[in-house]
Length: 633
Image 1 (cartoon, rainbow, N blue to C red):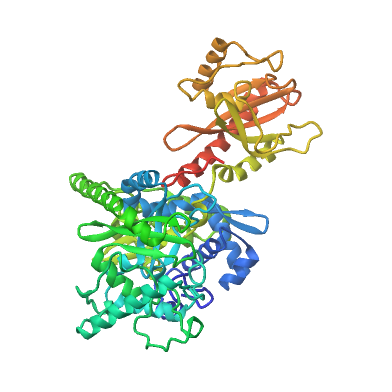
Image 2: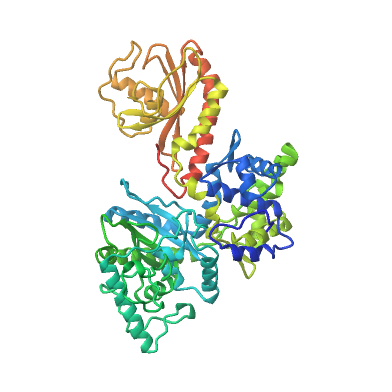
């Protein structure tokens, strides 16, 4: 890797430095640099100035400009003045991994149902080398709620899933973990978690538990039992793990005994020091606890979900100490968690049986290779074709295409075999694909390319730049609204600076029946609420039968035009916004004074622009909402 590009977060500086010296000769340097820019934007929570990217990557400003221009052309970033902002379409890279993985499609509903039943947050995670990444979050809405996002990378030793994944580690994985711990003693390479510079805090009961564990460890040592899990040894039967042992408390079991001179004179272990011990315990009991290892107050109980004998993912129930202690979480919820895991494993077995009976399909060429060539012709040297094509390779994978050989990647992308091969070599070097017997698979690290900050994006945030562009083209006010009962609520708004313009603030509620926004959303309902139809102007439709006929026509035509029914002089045209399944979730309108355009001009001039804008919003919404619920507000 070029020396002016920092290593990926969570990989450890020393191991990255070793990789830096062995960059394959056929690696695509622009792809390496482009991914470095995406990583920096991800670490910056999705937005950074171009000069900030120049400093953080060490790349020349001209290189940063060309990379961001290429990413903007692909729709992966948006250039907003001097800032680069991650765009929802970038999530198609992470979606490719999640689709190939299958687990979100098969298990998300189980996790959501468990969260609803327990009234606690539930997450699914996969292992990513010496860390874990979340692939699903079912969170509870509370004043204190879980803030982790899909794609966030956490150090394995500070989580409940980590010890479970580590039960399958070999010597190589343990060596990588120790190397990373030594190179990054405060977990600065994991932006999603607080630094581990603080020691673990112990109360009196915790110190008693600690002493019990030390005594048990010494007893086992006398019996000739070695607890070094890095040597693939198991926990002795003499080690009691249960109610008398709080699994997940940090411990330095091999430290020499110290004189009892008080708490202040005693060296306290730092977070994660007891990871090998916790892994041994997790191997013995089949579950693991996180007792405030990430931050004070956060507790979690985890169990592995296995497929074909291996851990496919880990499901966790996450709570706060104001609701459960770690021991209480274990004693109260472990039986129900076991039932949920059993149901998930049955789901995976049934899916595997069905998939084995289904012939594999080959993806048709995406046409992106042709698009990159045309973009190069149009933009010239400002467009880095090798970067765009390299990222295209990631999208070749997906549902039913978890494993692809070189020929299949080339066919799916439309790239030449030589081009696809160089891209795969580069992605493998960076850790985004693995190769075995000439077959390639995506790794969880793909989720680190923008997915965490974008996974919390709301519909209003997705729509905002599109609304702005439309308002600038038409020089009229543009709004986004959702339906709440028999009212509309404005969630996005771009106003013009005319002397006579429509002034409505975000959050404003209006009756749905006399508005264009309301009518396109009411038209999607099987039984729209048509009560209390008050005459707001002389032109307001108040007859339910007549209004129902209007809604039928709106449903058929796909738009609504309302002329001075909400307010005299106000004319508006609106189009519905649909989610992936076709359900209307919002609407966008263009509003103006009636003197600006006739109704016929609104249909001829405004409606095509409005439909095109809504189409772009829906494209982004469908990408963002493929594996998560996009908040409407």
